[in-house]
Image (cartoon, rainbow, N blue to C red; front, top):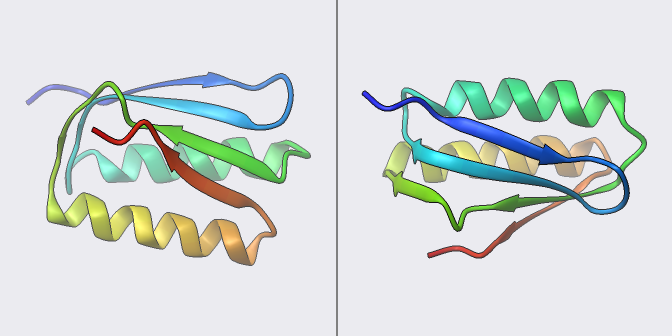
Length: 85
């Protein structure tokens, strides 16, 4: 299984998180942990998930993205998907 890599550009608004590799049921927890750490330690209220380098996205990952969006919204953060293939 290929690992998920996350690269963050965090120096302004919006914060951009590049998702590199497969986003699946097995790797979604990595994304959630990263989002939680990043967005609870920053003052950013605007974040983008760049999926241009995401190599695979399964149904479980879509549900995971929905959960992440809900968590971010409840935390006052606008979370957007960008460059979706």
